[in-house]
Length: 303
View (cartoon, one colour):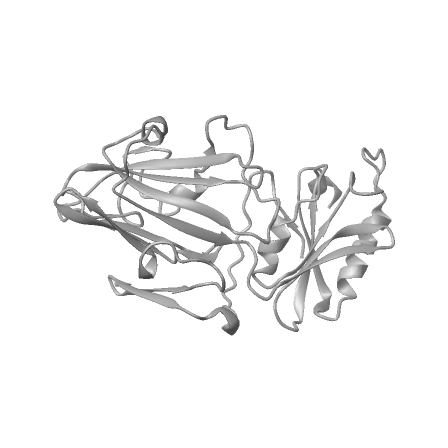
């Protein structure tokens, strides 16, 4: 199999696996219109807010409750976001903020109007403004942009640590500037998005000429293999980590500008990529005839 990603595209792997028993310490269960939402908490991570990913704050004459479930999970797990206790049929703003490993801030926001019962469910309610409009359950995540410059793409240099995201709800329809200027939120909580499933292995590789990092899923396999190629001057590992979290033995291969590799190669030798494939297929956990390539930028043309 050969997979190609154009710049900016997302690869979604639909392969559900269970969390390791080692981390199944706590579980929050909420029932909403017949759906059961379960959250498995990760070992050693603090649970921000009340049980179940809900946090309460005083909001006028009623308690405002912001529910996020799961609050801590893998990067691609569906997350339910709901708020209740608002004044019925009034405007509110949801805001999400996070920082990359260089400290750059990324933000998104959406304007909603509470229903007759003072509730907003991001999965079914229609956003009327902000970073997006319409019913967009993952809109707050997918519209995160650098704030305020919007010059850098959002990705993690260190896949071993999770994204830490703050979600807050404000009264009224506010801009990002207004909500950042000290306007008090009526409720807020933290979310944690992991790129690596517990029990995965990150293995730096230097064998012969090839240089990279191998991400191996938890367990003995066998797993299908993927060689992950970016056409950038630094080795990026986040995509390989995310693919390994869904059952692929993923080898993030460095093309150039790493250690003793050429900084700006004029010629790419195909034997280098053949060695990478042979190395991956030689791993006992990898299915010997199941290897593909996922690539972007310069790596796309080389694939």
